[in-house]
Amino acid sequence: MALQQQAVQKNTLYVGGLAEEVNESILHAAFIPFGDIKDVKTPLDQATQKHRSFGFVTFLEREDASAAMDNMDGAELYGLWADADTWFERQQQEEEMQRIQAENRAAMQEAEELHRKKMAQEREGEKEDETEVKDDPMARAEAEVLKQND
Image (cartoon, rainbow, N blue to C red):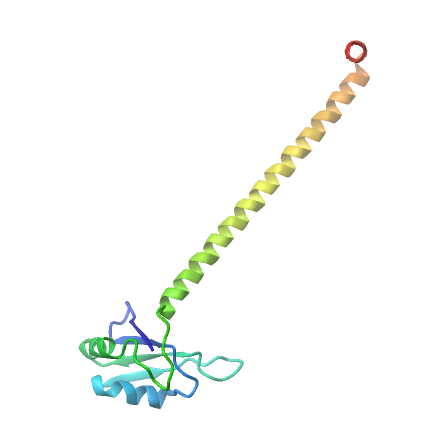
């Protein structure tokens, strides 16, 4: 299992990589040797009503949480080894990736909009040039001379 102390509450540990069979009672029993436990939570997936392979253990004392972290990080519980990444790190990476993707989408949309505007302006400019030539006898004569010289 992977353990990480939350920065907000240094007496709360994130416990990742939990096997499906692990419940709050088993998690409590695994961590009680390190000190008095205030709370154990394993958040449930709303669709399956099973825990989402992680939980939180809150100790009364920071020192107990630290001892549990030192001794249980990477430990095996019910035959499941935690991967090296922690849940918090993965969450931060996913959020950063989503932020970057959103920025890229916004930049692409802005570039596409600028391109559309530029193309529309060019088309308008071509129409204006054609209109000017049709309405101005001198411009019409110049255009004809240019065509003959080409």
